[in-house]
Length: 545
Image 1 (tube, rainbow, N blue to C red):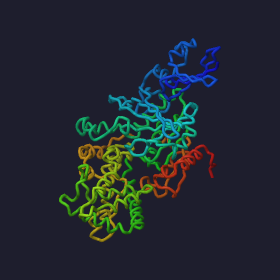
Image 2: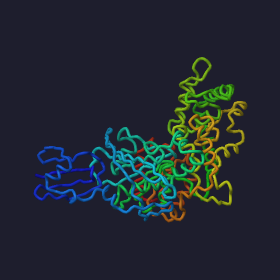
Image 3: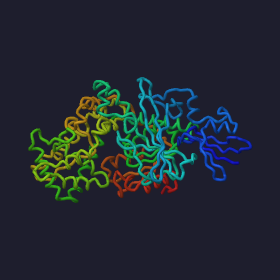
Image 4: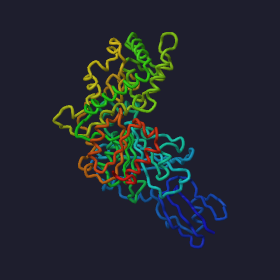
C-alpha cells in the first residue's frame, strides 16, 4: 500500500512506502492542522494523530527531519542591529501558527511573530507582528511556491483582508505564496492606539516608543520573518504600495541579498539626506490645486454647496459643529476631505457626501457628520497622523540647513506659504471655490479630532525630533543588483512624480512604468494587470527598449 502523508503542523510532507517505511521529503509546509491526513490509492481516507501514525509504520519521531520551526529553535540566537546588513545572522523570532480559514478561492493561515521592539537591542521589550499567509485553494499544498511579502501603504495601516481570489492577490497566488504583513502597530499586530499610547507614560515616553515604528523597524521585522519561514536562506519578492514602496527602498538599502525582486506601486520615495518634507509638500500642494480644479469642474454645483457649509460652520459657537465621536467639524477640518481626490472614486464620494449635508431643519445631518468621520482614518490609525511627516526624515540630524533636520509641521508651513489660497474664509469672501487639502497632517487636527487630542503633546515632540536615523543608504541603492520594477502614476497626488523619477534614476536597474491611466490607487483599480506587468518588467520578460 502506498500512502501520501502531509503534516503541515510539523512542517513535514512525506511519501511513505509501506515496505520501506521511509520519509523521503521534508518541506516548509505552513498550513497548520492537528492531524496527519493519509490517503490510500484505493481512495480510503483516514485521520491519524502523529504519534499513532508514526508508531503504526515503525518510525521514531527523532528519525524524521526537523521542521522549520524545530530547526530554527535550535539555531543560536543573536540580534539584528540597526545597521545590520544582509549577511547578518539575525535573531530568530518566537512564532506561532494560528487558524487556517478559507474564502472563495483562497486558503488563509495566520502567523504571529514576536520581535524586538528595538532591533538594536538598546531598548528592551517586544511586539507581536501578525502575518496572514495566502495561497490559492488549488495550490494550498504546493510548498514549492516562492514567497511574496506585501508591504502596505500608510504609514499605520494594516494589510488587506481578502474576501476572495480577486484583484492583485488573485494574480499573485498563481505564482507565489503571499504574506500580508500587518506592520508593527497596526491591525492584528501589537496595536498602537490613543489608549495604548497614553498607558505607556508621559508624552516623552510615548515619543520614545513611537520612534521604533518607522520603515527601518518594519523592514527588520520582515527580515526576521523571512529567516524564520525560509531557514535555508531562500530569497523572496516584495510588493510595496505607496508607503510600502518607501519600506521597499529601506529593504533594498539594508538587506538586498534577501530579495529576489522588488515591485513598487506608487511608492518611489525621495531618498535625499535629511528631511525632505518641505520639498515634498511644496510639490504636492501643486497637485492638490490641480485636483481641486478637476473636482469643481466635474461638480460645479458643489462650489456653492461647500461655501454654504463653510459659512454654517463658521457661524457656530466655537467655529464648528460637534461630531458624533466627540470631535468638532470646522472649515479647516472640512477641507481635509480632499485627501480622497487622489484615488479612484474619491471625488464622487465627496460629492455625494455634500449632497447629504442637510437634514431639512437647517442643521447638518447625522448622515453627513458620520460620513465625514468615516472618510478619514487619522483617529482609528494614529500612526498615520503621528509619524506621517517622519517618513520623509532620512537621518542627518546635523544637516547645515535647519529645515532638513526635523519635519516641524512641514505641511502647515508650506500651506502658509500658499498665501490665502487655502484659507476657507477668504475663499467664501472672494466668492471662489473653497479648496480642499490633500494627504497632509496639520497641528489643528490634534485639537479637533477627539481621538487625537490625548496625543497632541507627543505629536509636537515627534514633529520637532531631529535625530531620526537614516532610512536609506545611497551607496547600496546606487549599486543595487536586485531587479526593481515600479509603477509611477503621472498625476499622483500623494507621491510626487518628479521626485519618484529622481529616485528611479538613483536606484540602479529600476524599470519604471509611468502611466496616467491610473490614480494612486491603481493596484486596487486594476490589480492583476499592474501586478503582472511589474513582474514581467522585473523578470525582463518585457525587454528594455
